[in-house]
Image 1 (tube, helix red, strand yellow):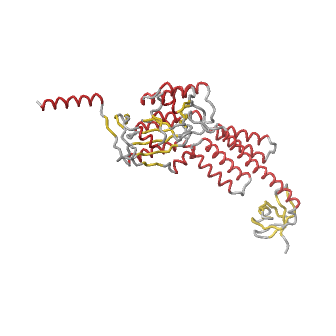
Image 2 (tube, one colour):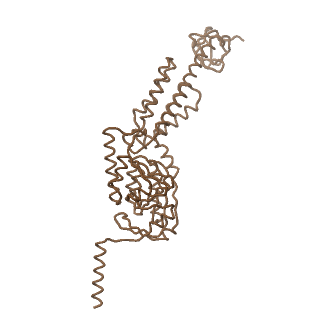
Image 3 (cartoon, rainbow, N blue to C red):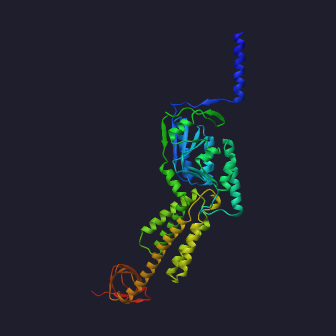
Length: 437
């Protein structure tokens, strides 16, 4: 009799478990909490930061990952990959918009709604996910509609899976709608408003989430060890190199530095800086898409400014500055970065600074060339020099520390002989004779 009842109860419990599905509870005090401080743009380095945090969580057998998010936006492609990482995570991920005054703008909206639990701190905001160009300007026409539809489809899918307000996230994309933490809670965009991390850990206790297709009840982490994962140096460098403003600065610096060394040789430092900038610019071009046309315009601008050496008119210099400016503004291919926002002020400022340095070098080279001609006619006559390359009758000599082409007026003169300057041909070639002892 008792045996039959036990069998019946076991069968009932088994059927309930099949219908409702298994629910496991996270271990409590014994499992640590991994915390990431994501106070940055959403760039390739940020993706690496997230993945390193998830690896630490797995290695340390963490029961929870908390992302403290404060971002003005970033790259859509990177954001999509980060969302995929969150969905694949076997550890619950809480996205917590903090601290007070922080925001989850643009790409930050997508990350927030993708979290297993979404939370915000008092005094924060979320929204304004309308796609913009890399220059910070609005996308126009069909490209805007295409970008919006793509982003709306993505964010609606995420919101639907997490049970969040699909209508609002669409408004955030199409109408740049932005709301406070209280409005976000009322409209079911987030789950919790927490004043700080301890308050967050207390409030999420016993909440059920779906992690890797398994229902999971969040345990008590209020007394758990906190493992803070800092962004590595590599992460910070990658993020710097993938910032559109920095990419523009690197290409402008590379072109300017190398050009200065070519137009006004001997400085060494401009050439070294230019080569370093070129290497970093090439690396950054592997991280984010760069417009070849933008790079070409910057190079053409430098060449036009350099042409002032041979045809001083002012028009070439103005054209060069304009070419460099346009190139820097359209250097980053904004069609592939609909989630990135950047100020136009940076490339304009960088262009004007670099163009000024380049113009200064060119005009310094012009002054030096004219001074050499004047000095050759008035100050070099009668000066002594050293033969560097035997004169038969032409060769090379050093006079007053400068190397000149020279022609002998007193027959063949061997290397290392002392000569005397007789005159200057066309302001460029010295007429010399062997100096009498």
